[in-house]
Structures are given as structure tokens and as C-alpha cells.
Length: 283
Image (tube, rainbow, N blue to C red; front, side, top):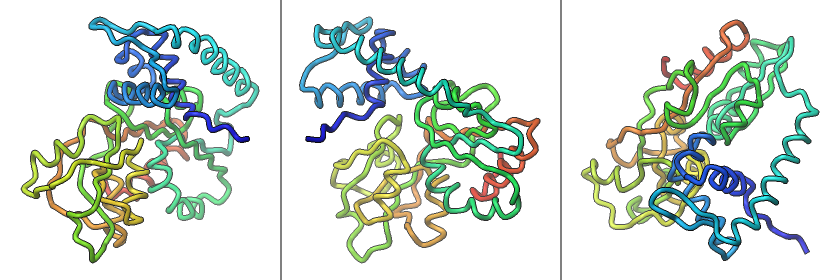
């Protein structure tokens, strides 16, 4: 019988939180928000049907179950690290390595990469979809597009703007205000903040929760519901007719997409300029 494991990221978050005994410090290490760390720990506890931490005013304490789980998780992560150390995943001559948020890779890079490849036919391009902060550290990428808060993305990264949060759904004859609300967890702002600045009244609360704007966009495009997402990702889909913005209201986002480039690599600079052009923005 096939066993269904919880998402591996939940274990990574658990290990960091147990090691630091604080969600905030774990969040800084992993390049996540404190809210995302807390939610993923709660999800793991629900999946395992046991409490892993005792929440204290000044930090965390592992329960007996948490103490039993920690060494096994730590050992597994270390084994995975050693297993990947044998592979050279860094850039080499004639190659371009791009480490990007999965949402950017899915909705911006993938649909348009053929255009870039045609202008650089002899260049080998490697796209790495990334989630954890360590993914960027290990990738040794020529171009990075990280999602997160400014404090977690490095000193040389520039935020891609504008990237306000907007409400979108698929073009449909159904009343949009009857659609379920889709919310990306782990981000600071959500539907409650949007409703506080919009004149549009929503009579419901989010009922579908996902772990990225990319997944929220996929669901919105497929008519699952109405999503609150970054305009950086949504605007091209609106222009193509795949989505409509249900209200002109938009709210600023504490987290965003940040671009970093190895300036000594001309191909990396070319790719960064091309990417910014596809987004229709300036850095």
C-alpha cells in the first residue's frame, strides 16, 4: 500500500523551528514569513494527529512527540544534503542558471522562454523552481527571482514593481461575488485587508487556501474561485483574457518578487533585461 507523506517542506520547517525554538527565527532562516511557518507547523501537527510544540510566551518547547520526531527528521535532511553534494549544480561556461520562485517560473518564464532561446540559440538555460531560502544558496544561480520580504532576499536584490495585490477570477457568466475566495497562506496581507480598502462588499470569507500565488492563479484561471494575487503575475493573464480584475481596488504587499543578477555574466544580464521586459516593468 502506498503511503502518503506530508509535504517535505513541513518537515524542513519543523526542523528549523525545533532547532531555534522560535517561529520568527526559523522564518528568517528559511526566507518565509512567521505566519507561514506557524501555519505549516499546525498543518503537520494536524496531519500527524499530535502536538509537536508547546507555545510559550518567550519561545517554543518540544513535546515528547516532537523530541522523538526531531532526530529522525534532522538525520533525513542531512542525508538528502549529502546525496545532492555529489552533483555540480553551479553555473559553467555556456550555461545560464536561473533560480526563480515557482510562481514566476510557471507564469512568466515558462510561457515565454522560447522567445529568449531563439535569440540565444547556443546557450544552455537551466531553470530551477525554488521554494526555500537554501534553494537559492545551493543553486549558485546567475539570475535569481526570490519571493519574500526585503529582509530575506539579500542586499543586491531589487524589488520588481508594481506588485500590488488585486482580486481576479476567470471570465464567467456566473456572478463573481458568488465564487469561493482563494487565499495564499504565509503572506502578510489577505482578503480581510483587501476588503478593508475596497468599496466592494464580500459576504464570505476565504474557503480555499493554497501555498503560493502561482497555485492561486491556476485555480482562478480554471474557474475554481476568486484569488487575491500579485498584480505582477496577474496583469499579463488579464491582458491575454484569461482573467478579469473584479474591482479596481489594490493593496500594497509586504512581500514581493526580488531580482538579483551576476553582473559579470552578460547572458545573465540579457536574461534579466528580457524578463523585466516580459513583465512590462522597470527595475
